[in-house]
Amino acid sequence: MSTAFGGSYSPDSIPAPVVGPGELTFAAIGLDHGHIYGMCNGLIDAGATLKAVYDPDPAKVAAFVAKFPQAQAARMEAEILADDDVRLVAGAAVTSERAALGIRVMDAGKDYFTDKAPLTTLDQLAAAREAVARTGRKYAVYYSERIHVETAVFASQLIESGAIGRVVQVLGTGPHRLSAGSRPDWFFEKEKYGGILCDIGSHQIEQILHYTGALDGAVAHSQIANYNNPDHPELDDFGDAMLTLDNGATGYFRCDWFTPDGLQTWGDGRTFILGTEGFIEQRKYLNIGTQDGPGHLYLANGEQEKHFDVHGKVGYPFFGQLVLDCLERTENAMTQEHAFKAAELAVRAQLGAVDLVARPGA
Image (cartoon, rainbow, N blue to C red; front, side):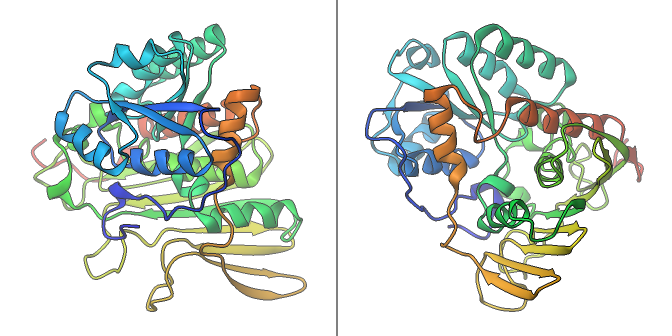
């Protein structure tokens, strides 16, 4: 796994097939974000069969086929949408274009699996909800900071076992390395990427909902800023928000683009989960100051305090569950309402955010 640049995040494979070859065939459309590689790796590890790929940029397609030589390069999107063998389409288009792509996919009778953030406006959300209701297809979302991180998976298992009692608060940090020179132009255009709370903040909001078990919530306060990127005045390089949830729990998160070059990985992502009978800390991508690698979880409760090294030991069950959900029309990987609620709260946090600093060039 590349550790320097979060845009190419793709964890090492942990094969756990739930179907045989050809039982669930999928394709990729939209290669604008490197997360498409992690998405496809996860599906392949679950036994899904990758058949085709399309993007209007031949260079992106060539790089994808070099990684996944089994994928046939389609001449146009419509070829994939008309292919009855393809049951699921994975996409990592420009963020503001993800909802429109998903609606085309669902209208073609296929399930859709998009990179986060899955949309950028409340109008897109309403259109996506309507398309799901009308077509009966899935609009699944790659909230990778939970579903493709072993500490995050293990934390869910501990909570389900009652290890920390009732979860009352989740605190998340989502720092990222900017690597501005490697980013496409659209990454710095707010209309296209949606803003920091909509974009990488959606990871944090999804985790807050998941770990607390909340079905709904409200944004109590949110903030954004461009502190240090005058060359990109539409970029939010900092954002944070506080949520109140329908079950009485709360959440707070901070995300930023300030990971220093001296850090061994693209971001020291952490999640702190407070329960009535204990707490959990996740050090997802590194144990800072050591060369211990990723996958560290700390638990304290009435019986013990313990450090778990879970790297390579837990796996990523979301992908197998998603494959089976597509075949069996179930919702075990993630409910549709949960995926949309996380997106909705992220958009609302962005729309209501206080801008802390006058924008460069404004």
